[in-house]
Image (cartoon, rainbow, N blue to C red):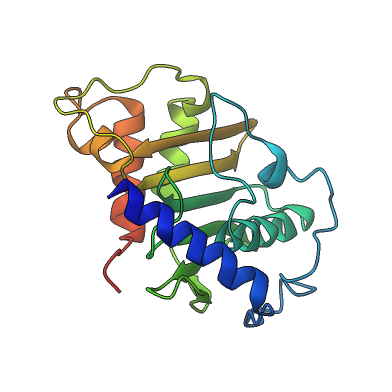
Length: 210
């Protein structure tokens, strides 16, 4: 399996270097200019906030950088609540991955999804309204950015897929990643991270079998 993922990663990188970027334009008047251009804020937290305690695969693959630039555009516009959730692996690029951007604007809530299919080419879905207040409440009330403990597991797995999250909320910035098995097989179902990641998965329902 590890060799298979490594081969896929090499194919992905070669295809990106040999073909021009043909990303579709964003169907939203609130995002200008195009996501294919550099973000205005060169210190955008969604493109720079990463360290050994917080790994979200910033800028590694096209789906990462495209979603990060989208989030940075919204951040430049002054969005007070903004969440970037990438459903990715931690050992190269999986053939089917997703990146969701959730935000609030003019008392409305929205979501935008970018994804890769079997060809590893980045595609997108139209912006739609999504009520994600439950996530904001969980993150803010539990002060999730200060929770340093991780859920104890019944079953440990390595190199599994899961959500890598960057969330800008009320006086907080959360950066963390949990593999699916980390919340699914957690002993303490009331751990704040288990509650948050379970709700995140319920709302976004990522698929890996397109």
